Image: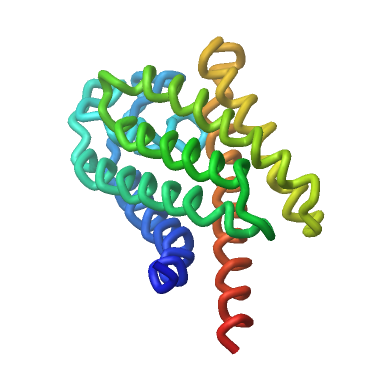
Length: 211
């Protein structure tokens, strides 16, 4: 088990890099069209397309999306990446307790549900469920962060939560929905930074212990 825990801390970094490569390739294959500009046929738009638009077989402009399969596989890679993130995240705290166990259970559960978001017919339901369980996971995270000494890490965690909540509420209420694709990408970049930083903290800690 200890060997597995030492290996799994690398998953968030490797997974995030792999996802970005796969998603970028799938986006390049996307023929165009979004909720904001349905008739567009000039490829994937950073400002108008959601990340999950690449998972659609038929685009908003009515064109066949040849990048769907790769986008689906990329999403599964992202799901595994985020599952591993919530699995290792509790280890940054000094002690194992009820809060750290809740972080792992609720976080892994939310990402297990997230896996099914690439299916168009389940997308909206999955967004709602992931939002609920991921928000619940942040409650014990915040409790443990009170005692955490790395202030920049704490600040980034708070920023990730606030931005994620704004994005989630925007999707659910449709308020400011026109700007949601752009906000989604900002949230993803900030979230990816937290994921990678967490992994690097644990990798460096393991190296110090091994030395």
